[in-house]
Length: 439
Image (tube, rainbow, N blue to C red):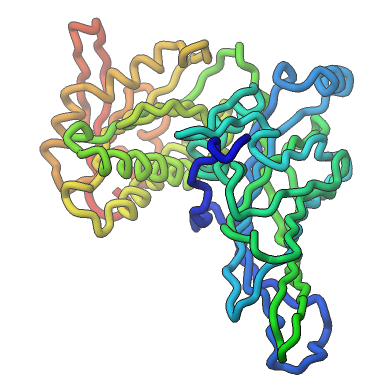
């Protein structure tokens, strides 16, 4: 990639919701030989929560595809990121080592990508463009779950080159070095690895570690300091199920749409899209869903999401609604009335199958019919104080809501009929208009 291919971005710090842990870098030496006032501290580091996404056999290189077929092993992309604190007193970083250790000795990093180009991403005037199937998986997984992480892999002026180590081992990582210390800006970094795990492994545990060296002046002489985390940062991630592109299954799906989006000027529309994506990710996280196993279709002023197979709807649906309530409350806090996000939201369930241009199935159509229905639009218009209104089909109300003992309770729903003659659509449903805490 040339300098003309570089695009700004990836410099934003990790979002609080994406930080696994924030730790202080401690001096490697047991005692400071130059006295208690010497500049030993190297500040701190924020480690992002690793993101795993499945890479099916057909997307693997031929060698790994054959190995997967012979051994039954599964493969996952792994995105990791970290932020360094800015140093003070004229000190500069000269070396930083980010290390991952997987607790399972049979889980290996079979490929380590030092930048987005090695992964298969092309960086131009806009968002990263996938040029390979592996990169396409990364874009799909990171798009909603970790916005901006793939931009961290872009070539950026003022950042030292990454050197990887530990390929085909369970302990691996990346080292950034610049003896002069002038290139460690910006201080935001991201990496990608392809992980191989036995088919029996459903939860991947491990540790993240960071070591750093700084250069500074102390008592009129140049001093180098070494520091590391006092304790490695543990992580535990449930691995998403293997992707079967051609399989059909009964799934829960969710559609959301921003009210009065078309009236917003471009700069506000752009921020609104970001707020929407973040709120919906936070809602799903509150429902304890694995974001990398959620299929998301962005729609500008809305979003359609198909949730993983096999979830417990009696747990997920109340948590999802409660999470959405909290997420929108946080999003709208302090915003002007013209900026505030107000949503129409619909849930449905049914047999669906991914196809070349979206999801095929009656539920995928019905959820959008309910979303755009007059009763839902009227409910949002007639209740200007609420952040959202929700509608569900009768089957979800009878199976889940009616038996729920946590908010939103069944008596907070009212019956509606969605009758769209021009679409030849008629369905009985239930409407929820939140009111107050936990509504």
